[in-house]
Length: 317
Image 1 (cartoon, rainbow, N blue to C red):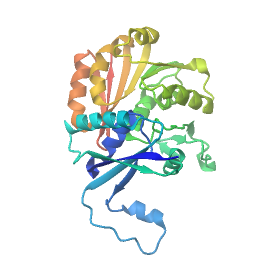
Image 2: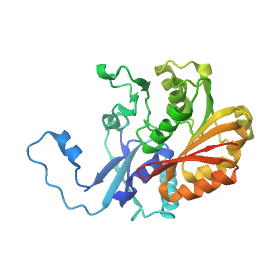
Image 3: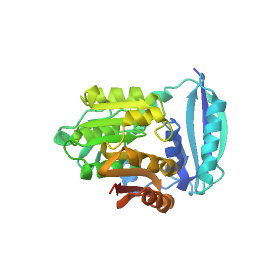
Image 4: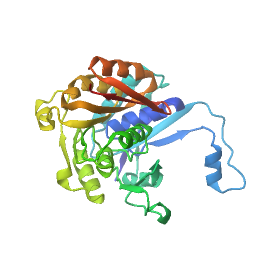
């Protein structure tokens, strides 16, 4: 099989944001080529006596992703170009140009797995299916999460920020609504922490199979975690399915530009005193999201940060 390869020329400072944006389009397994120097931690993991020589860092990065022949490259390229232009409006992405090439058969769909390994968010261990739980980790809370080819594993800072907030606010019997549920990692985390029921929404049909498989891997009964494909912002059917005044917690790990129209709508789904946990917010967008949350009638409880990412937690009075 032949593959279409798309390569984005950008700058190293924009790598994380562009990769996150690609993941929102369902594009995973991004290959990164840059000249950033190795950290001391990276060097320690290489187990070599003489380190390889590196060229001087020029700040340029090349991000490549691959599509099967059957997928329409023109449609994907147009989506990516639109997303890059949106990013360019509020941050420097360098050239932001895209080049295309073709490559021969390789197991691109599965080879990305070598870069995803089990990792911890405090005392919660997240393990992909292709790895075994180490004996010394068996006393931790363990989540078995496979991202598939369309969603992240939870390694991204934005997901970790939400997980830490869930640890603070989930109580036994909590009802949770997860907007943009993806692999289902946040809903499954909430249930493991004692939540009674989760509903999730997503725009990507791939989320249905991802959530179903991850529920099975974690022994989550179907009736404990329901989901629907659709846009809760403007789809009345999805809004009716979710219900009003029901939830103790709402999570939304979505880009800031989506949180702005979502927040005034989602307030209706929340109980009095309910917690709203948002993430996916680049630090330059923090003030805009905080203002949006306040204008929706919510009280900001906490703002947490990891790297250049921000999570805003609020309460419905």
